[in-house]
Image (cartoon, rainbow, N blue to C red):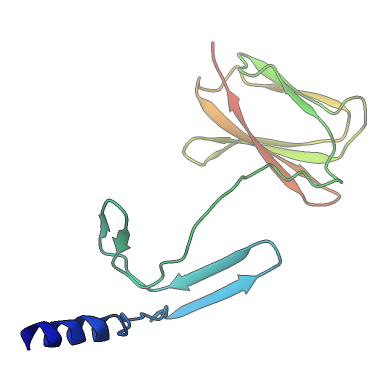
Length: 161
């Protein structure tokens, strides 16, 4: 009799389904955007408390647990942005912005590592020498903005002795 009850219990347990947890978010704001080759999901006002990593699973306390895969990130250069070179890099007393002989109208901003604006100016020619001799030896970010299209590109510039 026990053997028959055991067989029946094991047989019915195979028909049972496990719990299914629906994905939903309790947050103050959020949205999902989907296109043909990517999707973006964001939420605002949801805490993440702790992450537990096991041999096959990862559990993060919180609500929004989307799948995050980055295949590649490239520098998207607008077709209207002029071709140019920044040299020498690292620089000691000066560097050049060279627009390959084509006259351009661009603005440059030199920003230090704390986010402060150190130098700025407008270039209306095809090559500009920018002096660095009075600046500290450190890393800077140079932002170049095309004044016609308002597109901006940023680069790292190292000032050394």
